[in-house]
Image (cartoon, one colour):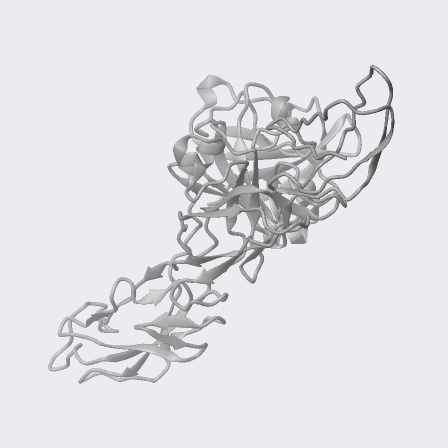
Length: 460
């Protein structure tokens, strides 16, 4: 009988109709929505306006694989040397507007934000198993399938995995309308390339008897030949070529001073062995490995500037590798707020890992207290209880605190239950504040009057 077209507010009105029964059916959906195929019956009565409310279903992109990390040099989803593609963290932001560039650069605020971590294969999926913290997921009409509505998504690495540098590229993708179905498929998982740390090796020959860097008599320290062998389970790229475990990657020959060195960036992060294969004139060579080189551990870089852009209360980052704790640490004005709010500022029962409000934010107290919930899904501080086992504590009791200006390393020395009124929760007086010697990690216990604490002391 008549066709209606909705205005910008989704409203449409017919002209006068005779009293009776009518059917209203959508023929064309608004942009970004799905056609409602339901026939809506309505009865028109004299001198009255009948209303029909139609719910529109927005189009969305079902999400699974969010991103794939690659080693930049090998272009493969496999780390080099002793590095890892696991435990990298990415901040994902969703904006309701459509943009080809990062909306944040223009001052836009995201509608929702999440932080995801990668697995051993360098993959991050848009699922709770990979979620570190963030808002609730968008879901399709089934209430289960995670999705992204039409809009703009940005993905940026905020924490690099062991052995790699942070890739600070902001990857931008638009989720656009297409077809007439609820599901659209336009999101392509980003391939994020990681640059591995590189270093070098220097060898210095000394006379065995004199311990000096000069030869005896007519002998010479020049001309000794050393080979460098990879001891890594993963391949390494050296001078543009890939080498596997137990392969010689480089050879060095000493100069007149008995020294030989690689370039400063010759070797990827990892473990290597140096063997002397030829002795210089006047010296013996037993042919046995003289020394094994293990480059200094390269700890992950924490992008505190990027973290502060999300939450200005961030003061540190805590890692307990043995139980998978890997979270930002915030500090509120009291010890209540972050029991209920995530790092992204959203209300959530998991809360945040937070520093006692009485402690100094620069960690210059002699003792600090850090709190976290005991979650049933194994997140936050739920696995602190494992350190009640002395054997596990000895093997896995390493704690790292990343601060903007330094990294502190601690070892767990004790794990026990205490009363909520225990003196351990007292904060040091002003005159005691000097060097941070002790860290107390505290989480909930079964009893409301008790807490489980882990005591950490600075590693000698």
